[in-house]
Image 1 (cartoon, rainbow, N blue to C red):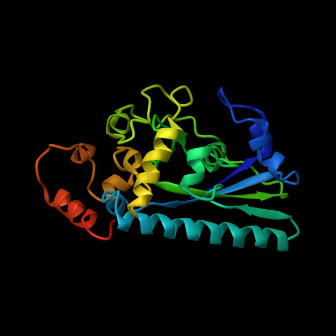
Image 2: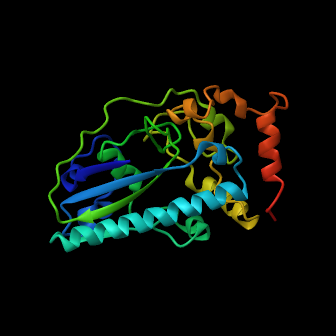
Length: 248
């Protein structure tokens, strides 16, 4: 996925409360005129095994690719005469850091929203038409004045509340974003425990979300398959197999 947003969009909040000015791209890189956002999908069948070593490695792979792609693209823009810098996909050291201060120095999901790539869901992440919330984003700050993509007007969230009910950390709220903000401390504490076992991140709230064309591709239109107590199935046995190995 690819989208572009003028930095002026950060100064015109689409909803309240909005991001403090110190987190705007032009505050971090004053030369910035545009933000280019790319998104890479998280493969649903791998995510379905979460928390697992398989999903952990997929997450790492996508993160590495995001950093590589945004780094190379920022250098290409710089070579063309438009000073540009990439922004790392995670602006923090590790999950232990989030326990002390659960905020990164830049929000890729808000950048993706302003670049027209999706709309926010009850789970506080960006939902996209193609992949639902199963996308990781990376950004480039550039001095190039690029045409912005239109912000998505459609609300993709169905308010099924699966993410709220199935969150193992009880970190989500039924209210719409941004009123129902995530309990970041609870989410970080759960992630820290999974990290201790070698199977972070969690991924449940994006796994159970019914939004996304990828569900049709993989034949997962019925998101109730993730509910416990639905009886054994070939899928559930497969997930349990993966979850039983490679963990502490």
